[in-house]
Image (cartoon, rainbow, N blue to C red; front, side):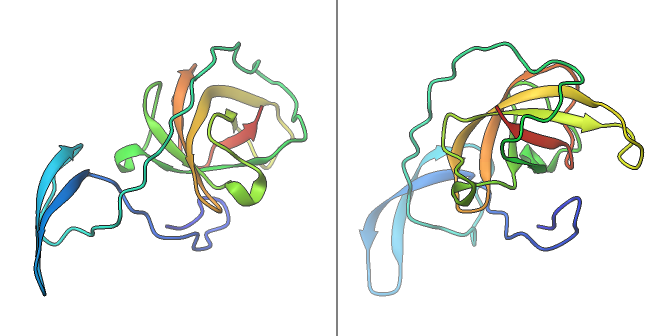
Length: 160
């Protein structure tokens, strides 16, 4: 994946399409049963050990105000949307380029802003709120819990 603003490589995207349970192990092979499928699972798909994720409770709160000034907390960008979509809305997942190295933790809420004319001083437009459900060193996956407008890759995400 490449960063939508800087263009630098930020990592490799791995989509979880389901999980399997290994029921028989042999010298060079194993037999597994698909326990949960969220999307198509194909022969040759990458397998990794299962990681249980504790999804935090989402506490309803008033969304950021339109044209709200920066609060000085962690501010990064939306770098990916669920299913490689071009736009996303309430209930969908997104990836932010901030992680545990930035102090982000599950349950944190980010306001999503769009600056219409980045080359000209202009106010930020509050478009959505997203709650972090899982975190890596430099990225976080969040669910859009409220959207006023569509969310796009490159939008600003600021910790509330």
